[in-house]
Image 1: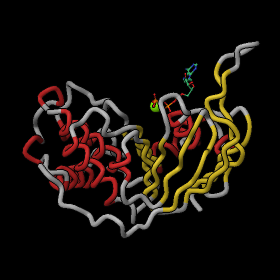
Image 2 (image 1 turned 45 degrees about the vertical axis):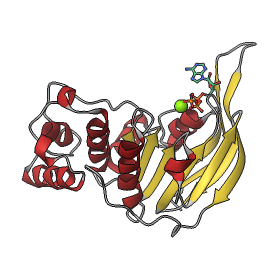
Image 3 (image 1 turned 180 degrees about the horizontal axis):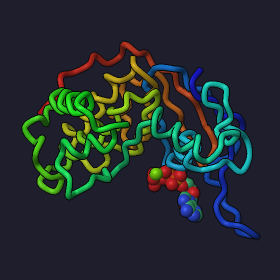
Image 4 (image 1 turned 135 degrees about the horizontal axis):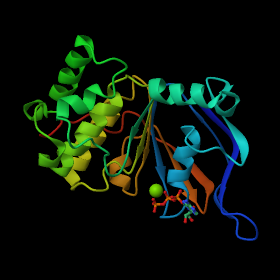
Length: 233
Ligand SMILES: Nc1ncnc2c1ncn2[C@@H]1O[C@H](COP(=O)(O)OP(=O)(O)OP(=O)(O)O)[C@@H](O)[C@H]1O
Ligand SMILES: [Mg+2]
């Protein structure tokens, strides 16, 4: 197993006003696959992602990455682990607007050498945005920006990709294209995607349903349910 959450909780606030965003969740994420997280607004989906990725420390319980407690690591080791092994895609991609598309990918590389430059170009081709290589993010459509964010998350070939509502700002066909890219990564690592939209999680290997911070149910999907579609430009 790659990631294991053992009875993790997260609360916000202190004193008499403690609100639990995540309550006593345990789960196991295998090395590869596409895993969905669903639930109403405020149910704790983003919080769960922050806990699993070591961005937030659980108030109770543990998150183990390959058997190691994320918080048994020093802050520095944890940051390095996140940088090297985890990739992130957020609802509104944080891109660097004064760098070109290609340069935005290079900043995600461990070193900006020729290999990294070639890898960036290959990803841009795979995501059908190679023609935008020298453009700036502000000149891109929402769908193009989100594909660039996915490319950036894949630059380091992470073992886990965490995506929080990566399609929420997109129309259906652009959203589908982004999901198809993430689905295509399922054989290379674990892809964990938060979405409101059940259509975007079709074909997931497993879906975690959250309600009020609790894990309500886990649905096992059939990996073969959805043939991979070609990516639309
Ligand atoms: N920084 C914070 N301070 C206080 N409470 C917070 C904070 N962040 C989140 N919460 C609360 O924790 C709960 C879970 O929030 P979270 O963002 O994880 O939900 P979510 O399922 O991702 O919602 P959405 O679908 O709207 O993104 C909510 O009740 C929210 O109000
Ligand atoms: Mg959220």
